[in-house]
Length: 366
Image 1 (cartoon, rainbow, N blue to C red):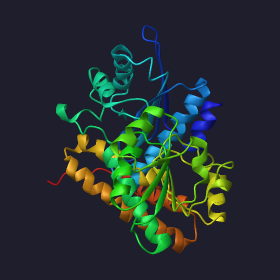
Image 2: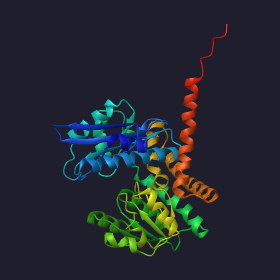
Image 3: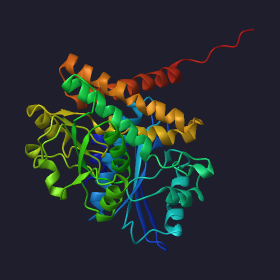
Image 4: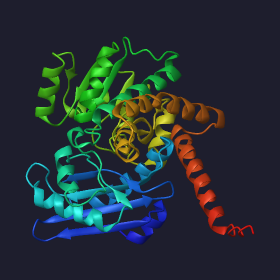
């Protein structure tokens, strides 16, 4: 990968490679945009096949965080960190403290948080080395696990999509095909079942399936991971890793809506978005519907309560409704409508900053 060409294409500001020999830490921090504020984004730990795959993920995810914060109305930019390694075997205090020192070296340009493969306890190790970390346990004054708030926002965003397609936001009798019952998917199921929906799910992790089945008393039906694409349903909800909606899977989908919390759901935005439109499947951009998580962790920065975060996450219903209306009025895809919302806000703030720099200082009155 030609790194500078890739940065120019997606307009990234900075990439930081982090290596700590004693712990074996290999991490990449990608800062996409800081027009609205410091770059906030989680730290993902995953056994990437190679460094190029890790970098590609960091670039895609950090850009998504920029747009997510902008659409959610937060004064934050977008960033992301990825640690190359197996979260089940490599985690230790020394590794995360080493990562924390790299975060500290950026002096607040990047604020980290938990993500796939990392947890609240991991972020507490990071906090030993830097204050630029969110997602700390509520016992220590943090906002805690953002997953419940993320799930709450996804639920409300899904309601907005249902209202657009079926004329009603009710989930009674609706079938949801849920891909991934990790933290967010696990909590989302509770909202869906309570609202009267039927949930069919899949996951590659047998322990997560067992936990979900036990928590919801067998109310969820499970399928092998590869079969979830073929389920006849109202909503296909990708809540695991990104890129699962692609040229191979789109022809198999038997749904009216794609709406889930996985980051970068579409493998190729330029091709997969139009392919969904052609099949008359409404796509709710993942970075819009999953904004509840970043709304939650942002409360640690602005001093608001968990209740404030929950109420704001419920507003994702209105945000999704707004972008769907823009898409219809301007005859553009939902993804372009969401991007337009984010880009208009960033452009307006960038212009204000430019004007403040160019405006000559006032002369003091005598």
